Amino acid sequence: MPPIVILTDSSADIDPALRQSLGIASVPLKVVFGQETYLDGVTLTAGQFFEKLKNSEELPTTSQPSPLDFVEGYKQIVERHGKEVQIIVLTVAASLSGTYQSALIAKSMMEEEIDITVIDSKAASFLQGFAAVEAARAVQAGKNKQQVLDLLDRILGEIRVYFIVDTLTYLQKGGRIGKASALIGSLLQIKPILSLDPLGTVYAFDKVRGTKKALARVFEALREYAQNEPVKALVLHGAAEGEANALLEQVKQQFRVEEAFLAEVGPVIGTHTGPGVLAVAMVKV
Image (cartoon, rainbow, N blue to C red; front, side, top):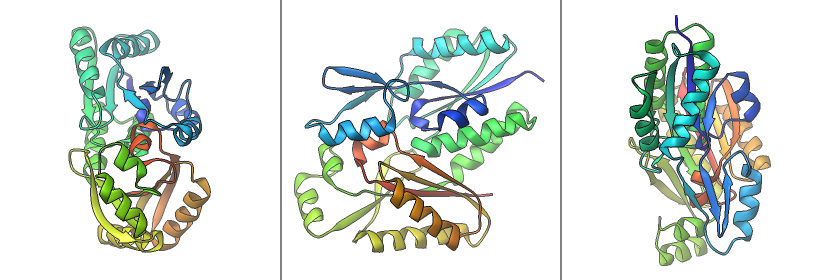
C-alpha cells in the first residue's frame, strides 16, 4: 500500500511534539502586526501572539499561505516518501481563510505527478487539528486512504464546539458585532456562546449573563449531543490555561470521556476572540 501523509496548515494548532510524532506535515499562515510579519507557529507562538494582541492598538491580520507555499510542502513530502505517496490535505475552513483555495491551486499544479486530496475542514484551531491527529493515527494503524477519508468525514460532520469569549472587544474590533452591542453586552456581563455552523462560519449560539451560566448552557448542549455515550473531548483556550484545566476536569466528571485534549487557540480564531476565550468540543467515539 502506498504511504499516506496528512498535511494541514498552522491554524490546526497541533502541539509540535504531537504533530512530529504522528508525521503530520504543516504549512504556516502569516500573522501581521503593523509592519511585522510572522510565520504562525514558526516565528510566533500562541503565547507570544496573545501577549502582542493585548498590547496592540490595532487588530493583527492573518494571511493564507500562497499556492507556491503548498507546492513546496507537497514537494518536501514527495522527497521524503517518494512519488507513490498519497497526500491528504486538511485546511482551515474556507469561510475563514483562503488557505483551502491555495491548497487546491497547488494541487492543480502537481496532480499529474502525485495523488493529492484537499479537504475543507469547515473548522479551525484544534478542531481541525484533532481531525488531522485522528487521521494520522488511522494511517499509523494501517488504514487505507478511503478509510481515512471516511473517518475524517465522520469526525468533521459530528464534532460539536462551543466558545465563550472573555471580552466582546475583539469581536467588535473584528466586525462580528457592533460597537453598541459590545458596550451593552460588557455592561450587562453578557457572555455570547459561539459555535461553528456547517460551513465553518462563527455564529452566536446563545447569549447568557455570566461565565457560570454560559458554561452551564454549553454543558447542556453537549449533553444533548453526547446522550451519555463515550466521547473524545477537547478544551481550547486563549492564554487561560488555568481556567482551561479546571474546565477539562469538569468535562471529565460530567461525560464519559475516553480521551481528552487541551490546546491553545492560535491567531486565526484568536484574532476575533481575544485572550481568555474558552471552548469545549467533543465527538462520539
